[in-house]
Length: 81
Image (cartoon, rainbow, N blue to C red):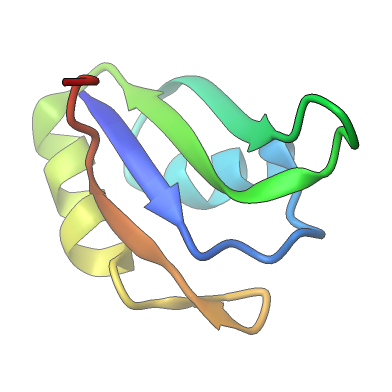
């Protein structure tokens, strides 16, 4: 399952975020989206987890949870329209 994680602090690194989600199950990939010109984080990421039930549990428990001083928005990623 592909998960959208938003409202991240600009200081959060991919390995920090991956560590949080690995508490729920195996993380296939973790990508923080960065601005092309400044290479700064845009404050959101996409995380892919192999096990859908683990991903669902992570979404339920992490949505609204505080991470690095900000409440995260965690939900299933939707394909581009």
